[in-house]
Image (tube, rainbow, N blue to C red):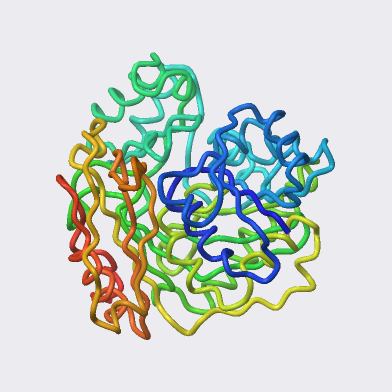
Length: 423
């Protein structure tokens, strides 16, 4: 069948790459896609979701996969379903789990899902009073969507108050920060877990670890993610079971009780504290760059996984993973994440080493094509992905590929997966 993938980043490129040669997929469409997705399928530039649904009907696009959070929060799934179209992703109501951190935290509390102690408020006095009760560091979060950047880890009470004040005034994140969450800081290690859900059943993918900070050693500002690896050895069967029993199952049951059954990707940000999983946040889509490493680790059909989730048939599926590890290293533009960068031509050297050629690939994100030439157009430009039978092998291959990719001002971390290799 014809399949459309909504989004323009490395996440959407990776999903398309994983499905391109699937026997169930005749043609891929990307909306809007990027300069490299047109090598996998056809780019479509339609911004209005009603028009896009009509385009899908007119072009016999039988299945749509939504990549980013904004269309989900805006209700694209409801619009497509109203037109009788099959689409993978949560409804507008269910997408509040990411669209509003206040909704999410209150949901966790209501259904007794372990999370950090918090307050949600739009009152500066109430916020300041709660901040004074916490030990530093202190977590300050904007309520709405901030593209992964609406979280401040304050190292003093004054810094926490300043961050909260700037959010509540609209200075930091506009309307997204007009209500804030103040949260106790949890001291542990962070994991990304992804459950593919059909409202009733779910499939839990391998746990990944993301690297949010810009610089080596987890220094510098938070970004959308500078690299990731999976599966992580920091998770054992016991921890997976705790996440299933204490987080995923009560979430699916709770969302049904709320009248908003959850279908799509439930991305659980977990902090492991003394062996116990504490829920930091929910997102309602794949993480980026986690998606770029999870897709090539799937041995069974990625199309089947998403399509059966979208049609309520996950219980029919037997999901298999390769017995391998994936490491993804993000290459960003010169001025990321501070400002936009001047477009720069991307040059990829011809790879002669068979081991590198057969066990690595590039997932493109912030790129555009002009007269057949690919340019880095800003932000996170691409992800170099390496696969191997150990994390070290996958990491070495990913960095070997990084050495073959050139553009002016390229920026990358050199220590992706250091937590696992140190463990």
